[in-house]
Image (tube, rainbow, N blue to C red; front, side):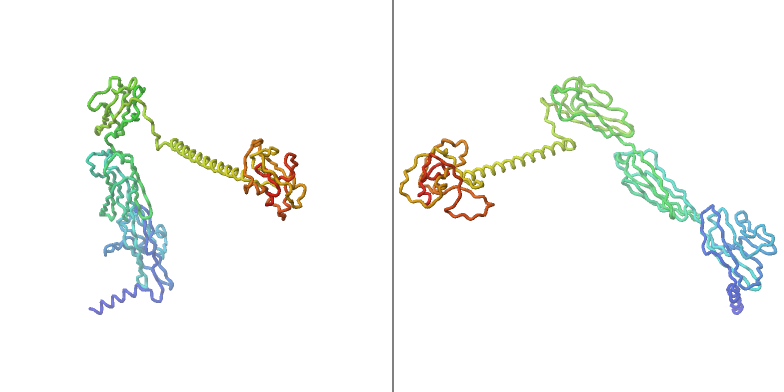
Length: 498
C-alpha cells in the first residue's frame, strides 16, 4: 500500500513538471484592483514540442484550503461558467468562436467584489503530456467612505471647563485601513479607533476633544485621511457659544471740571450677541443728567464732581450674564497727557527730540573747541609768533614816531661796519588801536634786547648774524644811533649787540 501511494505521488509530480517537451502554463503572479472594477486573469499554454492535444481547461478558485470551479473550456463540449460566476465571468478569446483555440484561456471578472479575492488556478489537461497548471493571486481593494462631522451643531463653553468631543473624522469600510491625522491651531487631543468588518474592510474613526472656550470659537479643524497613496481632507468651523466678555471704554483718566461731551460705552464680545445692557453705580445711583442709549452712557452738560464713582455694566445673552466696571475720578484741572508708547507718531517725535538734543550738544562742543583754538592762536600771535615773510612787528604798546623817553646814549660808542639800512631800522606793522599808547619799560629787559622777526619757513637761505635782513622805513624822529624795538621802545646800537 505504501508503494502504491509513493508511486501515485511521483506520477503527479511528473505530470506537472515539463521535462524534455517544454510545455508550461504562463500566468501573472499578482493582480489587484478595486471593488466594482473589471479585471483580467490571463492564462497561456506554452507548447514547444507539438503535437500536443489539449483535452480541457479548468479555472478554479482556491480559498481557505478549498477549491471551487469557476469556468471550464472543452473542445467538444464548449464553454461552461458555474452559476456563482455566470453573470460576471467569461473567457476573453473563446466566446462566440466556432473553432476556438484553447492555448489562450484568459478570463474576465467584471463588477469585482470583495469575495472575489482568492488564488485562481488555471489547469490544462493534455495528451499525452498530462496536466499542466499555474496560479495567480487576486487582491481586491475597497476605497473607504470618508467624511467629517461636528459632534453637535452648537458647542457651549461652560464655566466648569469640561472636555468634550467637538468633531469626528470617519474613514469607513476601507481595505486596507486608512490613517487619520488632524491639522488645526486649536489646542486639543485626538482619539483613534479601528473596527474590522465581516467582509474584510476596516472602519477608522478619530474624535477631536477640547475644552470649549471663547478662544475656540470659529477655529478651523481639518481632518486628513491617507488611503494608500491618496490624501483626502475635510474641514469644519467650530461654533462655540459663550457668555459676554465685557469692558467699558470712554474714561481716559482726564475727566476734569467743566469738560464737555464725555461718555462711557459698554463693549461686550458674546456669542450669541448680547440681548440687554444694564448700567449701575456701585454704592449709589446714576447722575441725573445721564442719558442711557443702548450700551452707552451720555453725560449731558459739563463734568462735575457728581460724575465720580464706580460704573458697572451688566451684559446678558442666552448663555448668561457678565459684568464690567470702571472707576471714574474727576479732577479740578486737566491732567498732563503722557505720550502713548504704542503711538508711532509719539515715538517718532520723541526720537526726533532726542536726536535734535544730541545734535545741538555736538554743535556746542564743536563751537567751544573752535573758540578755544582761536583764542590760543591769538595769544601766541601777541607773543610774536606770526608766520609772515620777513617782517618785524612791534608789541602794539606804542605808536611809531611816539617814542617814550629813554636814556641818553654815549656818542663815542663804536659800531661795527653795518650797512646804512641797518642803522635806520624802524618799527613797522603797529596794530590798529594802539596808536599813541605810552608804556613804561625797563631798558635792561631781555625782551628789549632780542629782535622780533620771522623768516619764511619755506626759504632755506643761510644767514649770518650780522647780515640779517630787515625791512626798514625811514623814521625821522628816531636818532641814527638808536634801534627801534618791537614793544615801541628804542635802544642804542651798543646795547643791541651786547
